[in-house]
Length: 282
Image (tube, rainbow, N blue to C red; front, top):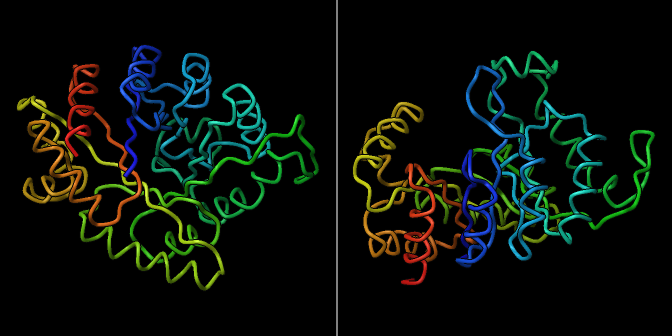
């Protein structure tokens, strides 16, 4: 099971360097531009900076919000980032989770038909990035098409879309048992399309050895997901490095391919060290 880490909102360059030095497989930049004053860095620019200071880690995006990004411009950005990074981009795409946000209104992002937009992007982006013509344009210099990571909840349309187009399914807050079930369903859908079974990249929130931050994380996620604290505990990583390693092992045994962790503690670099220690105990 591969292990990735979400980048913080500040100290990004130092965090990326540290993550690579500790052996993490990927670093992710979330696309969460809301426009109400909430701090958020533009993720393509973030990964351009990260590409310049790292050599090995995959550059992930969580999920780029397709409704807020013209496809041809996004293709040009990713094509360029492939060249700058030595082909380390993994292109995560989703329908976006903030259609009510001021930023969406400011860029005239559509709030309906988002699934169709995502399907179009999944079909066209690899074509454009590799230098073939689409949408009336041809982009050069051509770059290798990055792996496609398709986002969505544990529902049939998202799984079918991933099986048809994706190399990975990106999801969040699932238990090990739910991962095993979803993996079997992905395999069945992929067989219908005559494609290999996509791998699964699961995102979880994590706080190690920081009880106040853990309690705050649980409260926030309980409100967001409308689940009890006990349910949230089943889909987060916390406790000591040894306890975290045990939780990670449960997901590995369930067949999870990649685990991406987002740190909910204020001491980001310390959390990186603790998570890396947990991984070493697997």
